[in-house]
Length: 140
Image (cartoon, rainbow, N blue to C red; front, top):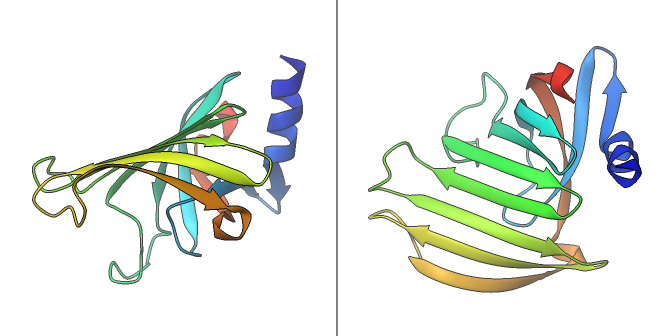
């Protein structure tokens, strides 16, 4: 439990009236992200991810449905477009000191590379992006 509290205190930063989370991403480009906290407990925090309101959908870079479960030993990202027949994807990652090993899966008629693959991301490929908590900050 103490390590979880230390982890959470390092993860959350209050700025003005916003709560900002700094989370590593292995499958995204640099961009702004809003997070809605669904649940937060010692092993992991579950959050819905979205582009900030007003972002042009062509500039968003996120799937319409994205859920991240993130904690000290957990990293699971679900991605989709609302129609499971069109696209569904997942990324399950285990993090090391300087790398992340991710098993990625994609299916559906719009999947560029359907099937499963395992990728090792080097530290220079891992982006730590700020997420603005749009709702659910009281759950943290």
